[in-house]
Amino acid sequence: MAYLPLYRKYRPKNLQEIVGQEHIKHALSSAIELGKISHAYLFTGPRGTGKTSTARILAKSLNCQKGITLVPCEECPSCLDIKNSNPIDVIEIDAASNRSVEDARNILEKIQYVPVNGRFKIYIIDEVHMLTKEAFNTLLKTLEEPPENVIFILATTEIQKVLDTIVSRCQRFDFRRISNEDIFNHLKSISEKENIDIEDEALRTIAKTSSGGMRDALALLDQISVLDKKITTADVNSLLGRLSFETLEELFEQIENSSPQGAIEVVEKIYNSGNEPVQILTNLASYLKNLLICKNTDNKELLIELTQLSEGQIKTLKKREIENHQLTFLIERTSYYIKELKTSINQQLWLEVAIIDLANLTENTSLLSLQERLTRLESGSVPQPKFTEIKPVQPTVQPPIQTIVKKVEEEKRSEDIDEEPEAMPISKSAPVSDLRNMWLKLLQNISSPPTVSLLNQHCVPVEISDKKIVIACKESFLKLVSSDSKKTAIEEGAKKIFNSSTEVVVRAISPEDIAEKKNEKPVVETKIQVEKKEEEISDEDEHSEYIEKQKQEKMQKEIIANSDQVSMVVKLFNGKMID
Image 1 (cartoon, rainbow, N blue to C red):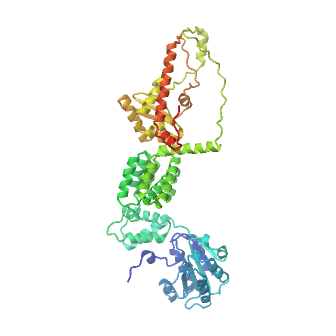
Image 2: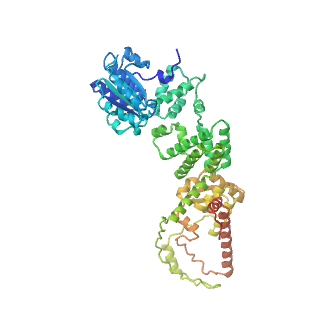
């Protein structure tokens, strides 16, 4: 006897054996028990969800010679004819190849003949949406009022293409995608019956790949069952052309660390192993989608259902320190390059361009924000900044050079001091000017341009010493700056300055930090030194302070001018640097 594929061998024989369509089983079972049989049914849903199998089971239940029943006997001529796919009273028509008006008229001519073995003559029209509008109109009147012994069962995967006049004359049943868990359990049961040695994780991978279609899942299991060893997830991935989770982790690690060279090396290894460029980016897009879901969902059961990953893999994705807007950007860019690859002659070229683009994560997301802001500025949609009211401050008069400050009455001063709280210093390690100098020197010694750009734009120094560096940054960039790769880059820069290991601490920015970044003093009254009775202000001090300020501004301009991000903006808008 010829080999029978698994999806045909294990086709359900009655309504109770249908997997994952409980609402349809209940409705049809009740209709059969009550004897309320409609003249026309319309089954709609994705492929492989049981539409044709349910139509055949319904035909067997209605034409079984033991009577209309929920469980056909499988022994009478009518049941055997349907089982062997050569029934006389059940006519299956493929609308894709019989879609013309002449085919519809042929059906109308044969409808007049009475059934031979069963009670009803049943017409199962598969892919009914493929019929022409004229063919639909030819069947319309007969579908509305067919002979008493004729039943129509229409099946389609694209209900939106079926005329509303046809839909309104049928009882409609919507077949849902079968859940991955139901598919897994069914595959596991069949594997045990067929003595197929396969891992549970491999079965789950097949279930996820089938996209809710049982027929596709059984076809994959049938195909891989020929291996003469225990079937693993790697075997299934190899058959399907999918990349393993570990390989995708390795690739994303390089993208997250903004390492184009490392990303290219990983992709080259994947490509040389036989994977196509479109396949590589499609797998990466799926990984990014799973990562986005894991970062925004805490429901364990929902995560497993949506991502089809193990608990350990889900925990790994949740530990990733990347923002939602960056993930969204990566998914958009990956989708764009997938579209380009499908129409490109040199796919390997576009694959390498795509990976280099994705690996420049920090620069790309910052440039994207800049472009959006420029667009809003040009359209005039950027709101004017709101200024908060600032209380007037008593103006201070600059004393003349070499002038001695008058003595202050000690009693009055000491009374005021007792009422004032002590001020908190901005930095524990150095004065403001020294801290600023050390910060600029640190930025110059960091070898990673993305890290320098990130620190220069979104962070301020709080403390810099040979033992400890404290950096404050915006809340939205806290996770990114706190990542291991960024901290390592800062530590290496500090080592070049101090020749020793330095601890790096990153925290959220505070109002005092913002005041320091703007070169303003925080609004805190400092404790007056009563013992200090006089103070001199010399021309030499003012001059040295001016020179120091000029040096700082020059160093700041050099860092900005050498930034990769600024270079990209200059090239993008065909501009030039000005003072």
